Image (tube, rainbow, N blue to C red; front, side, top):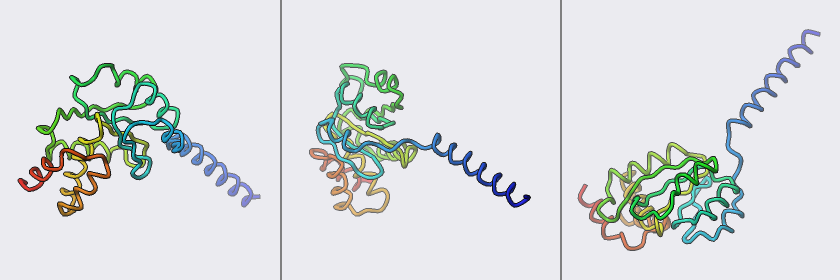
Length: 177
């Protein structure tokens, strides 16, 4: 009888903890739905981390339905024609603005700021975007170099994240440090 009570107690604890973890973890992202959003320059990296160009309001709604929970926007407020943050929050997603107003803001400090945000949501579903994903890739390249990749490998990583026209800026930043 004592053994049965111990087993029942153990199963009860497992059931409770299983319920807790089901609530505490995010639901998996529907990758196929994310791909169907047709967001320009959309790339999935790892663990449901996406980089892209500016999504429309409708595309953000689709991302929310697909299970994406966090949006990091690198566009400056002067580039915005609508309140993306308000929409994102109304859909139950978190919104983080890290304004990068062009080449002058492509810095080691801002690369670290982006890395900190990505690390904060590690293992969670994230979209990080700017207008084209060029600034996203530039900051990722700087961060990769900061983390020990050589310049060429860091630039390759930045290109996978969307960097196009900021390669010379990134080279200057990583060579000046």
